[in-house]
Image 1 (tube, rainbow, N blue to C red):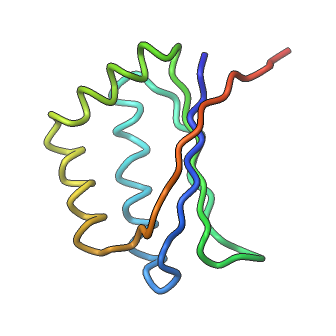
Image 2: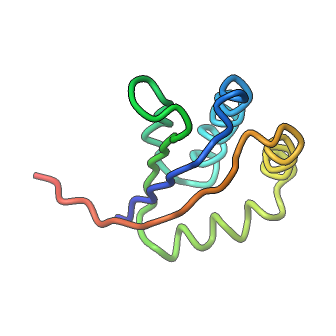
Length: 101
């Protein structure tokens, strides 16, 4: 299993728009075989940092998801929504291997 960690720098004045964007992606990740662990929005501390975590069975499954998402109409609509609202300033993506009992 591989878990993708996304750290977003968001526009704090577009928090509602970012939350809408986040809610668009949760079912899309699951549509392509992933397990979404949720988005985490600012509460205390920095008001412009948000996180997301989701897992796939392995890196190959993640790569298939990425390729397929580029051709999917719902995913393209989510990408356009983020671009149109400018709710995301930047993001970084890292991958982790969970240790489970």
